[in-house]
Image 1 (cartoon, rainbow, N blue to C red):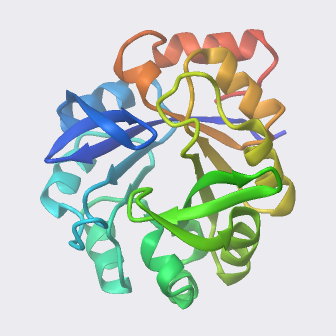
Image 2: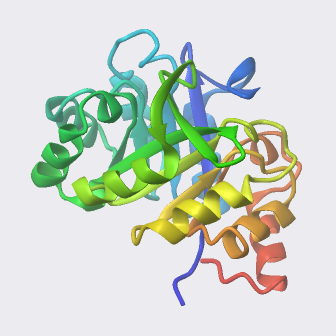
Image 3: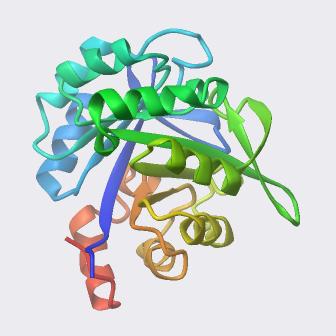
Amino acid sequence: MLLKRIIPCLDVAGGRVVKGIHFRQLRDQGDPVVMARAYSDQGADELVFLDIEAAPQQRATLVDLVERTARSVFIPFTVGGGIRDVDEIRTLLRAGADKVSIQTAAVQRPAFITEAARVYGSQCIVVAIDAKRETDAGWRVYTHGGRQVTDLDAIGWAKDAERRGAGEILLTSIDADGTQNGYDLPLTRAVANAIQIPVIASGGAGHPKDLAAVLTEGRADAALAASIFHEGAFPIADTKRYLREHGVPVR
């Protein structure tokens, strides 16, 4: 059985780590370089850095901040935010990223996924999906940091992204984001059941039991969380210990 991954997320705005609810009401959480180093030292399996202002502001990711963050960690490092072409991916990989997360540009031009996978390999390409339940029948994909709705169904888009060359899906529930009431298990399970590539679940972690649920009932391969780690309520070592004690195989 593959071991499950625990991944802290650094949502960055204005050069600082922030956290909100439903992608709104952002609160300052600290310096990304300092926090990244701490999570690496504490035993995080990977780290995700998302420049959440890049796509809405139609600009590139803050490369200097990525470089400084990459130098502080010794674990796989994924960077996302405003990535629009293969040249920007090259810049971020040279800056120290191991993988990149693409979202808005992938929706606007799906061929970008295939181009990126051909140049850098699927193992480097994470397609991020921000989804919100629209009806009892399914979930709609949003772009530009959750600000713009599309006509894409989240499950169908995940399947298309896999077909085009994505190596992983970073799946965030807008409904659950920041609530600390647990992940959207039906959404995560529906996507995980529809594709063969790994699914990283995001949005809603408030207690290690939520990670246990999404990694088992939700069938996610990895659990991404922010608030419970940033606020120190459940350090990574304690979270992993809880998961092991409840039968979840973690690294």
